[in-house]
Length: 260
Image: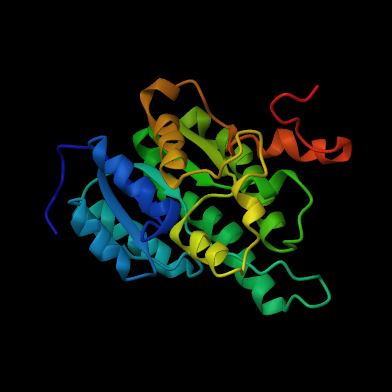
């Protein structure tokens, strides 16, 4: 790898697919030099398609995270932005039937992986007195849902974001979170078409549609930009109004056109 010094470097964990891939393409389009850090080798193809780089990263392995960050800093240059998008999902099982190995894996990747990646890359940012970290949380962090490992892990991501924002703000490092709503990724679209997921997800919010992955990416792009220079420690929902509309089911749901 050769040194890249003409544009800011943005590392995106979990950038091989879904929201992570959308973030990678959006940041590249805005002139950032993107490094996709992922356990999925598909990330190498995505990186090539946007003129970026790929680095193998398993966020559940501390040594791998440290080695990945050190290699990027040495071979490509200083990392200005980190987007923590690596994550795994879980089936909506009851607590009695949810295997603890699934629970542990979700917490290891979604919660602990976000924390370890943030701390590791922030060590370099702190020395330079600049940088941004954006964590991908979830609207499930704000509501009761039948996701007994995923939702608590994402709630922890929001708390981690707030704690690290206060800790590193004096060092010039901003830390924020974006909480996507139900996002129409290829995987979710396929699950809906196959009947594995309820199509009600397509319209159960104020705007009556699902979030596009690109819309989440644009929110991330704003938070890492100079336009958000005074913003740190926030959790920005990008959910088409899911959070503000779900409680309306108690009153019969959102009003339709013509109703009063």
